[in-house]
Length: 293
Image 1 (cartoon, rainbow, N blue to C red):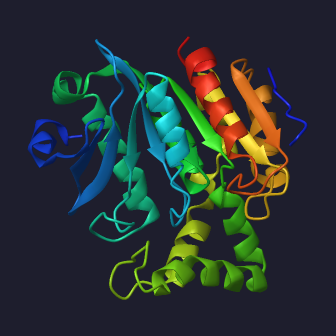
Image 2 (cartoon, rainbow, N blue to C red; image 1 turned 90 degrees about the vertical axis):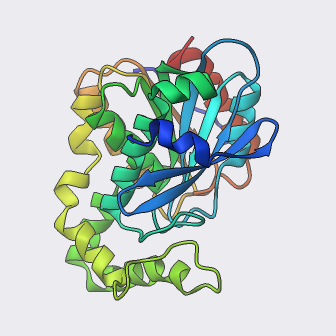
C-alpha cells in the first residue's frame, strides 16, 4: 500500500439539458430530476477539445464547505466537475435523508453517463471519478462499492456513519449531542438542510443506528480493493477523528490486498481550514496521476 505522509500536517439525461442555465462561460447551473424533486447542481466545464474526464464532487453535512477551490483547480487541470446538492440541501428541492442522498448520487452518475452529457458537456463516461468530503466522502466510497463504473474515488475526512451510530446506540449522551448537531442547521434563518415535514434529528440518528452495519465503510473495503483511492484525514479533526474513521478503512483495504491506495494525513481540522492549498494540490495531482494518468 502506497502512503503519502505530509508532515505539516439517471435518468436525468436528455431531459436535464433544457433546464440548464449558463452561470458563466465555463459554468452551467443544472436541475437534475431525482425522486420527487429536482437537484440543484453546478457544472464546471473544462476547456479544450474532445471528451473530458469528469469529477462528481460531493459535499458533507450540511454542506457549509463546498470545496469550490477543488472544483476550480480540477477544472483548470482539464476536468469537468459536477458539484451536487442532495435533496433537501441548499438549492435542491425535497427533503434530506441518507437514503435520498444515496439515490441522488446515483442519479448524478447516470446523468454524467448519458449520451446527452457526452454530446453537450463533453463528458468521457469511461473516466469518471467521485470526490467527497465528510459525509460526501462516505457517499463517494459507498457509490464506488455499488457501481463498478466509478473508476476511482477520493474521500476527504470521510465520516463513517457506523462509528457515530454505534456510539449513539451505546451512549445516551453521545446520542443527544449527535441529534443536536444534526438539527442545528435546520434551525438557521435560511437552513442549508431541510428534513421532511415532522421529521427530526432524532429520526435521522435512529436511521443511522438501525442501518449501522450497511453504512459501515470498513465492511465495503473488499469491494474497493481493485480501484484507485485517495483517503485524506485531518490529524486535528474532532468531528471524524482519523484514528476512528480513516485508519480502520486503510487497515481493511490493506487486509483485502488493495494496492492502489494513496493516504495522506494533514495537520489540520475537519475542513482543512489551515491548509486548503495543500489539500487542493494533493487532490488534483492524484486525479492526474493515480486516478487517470
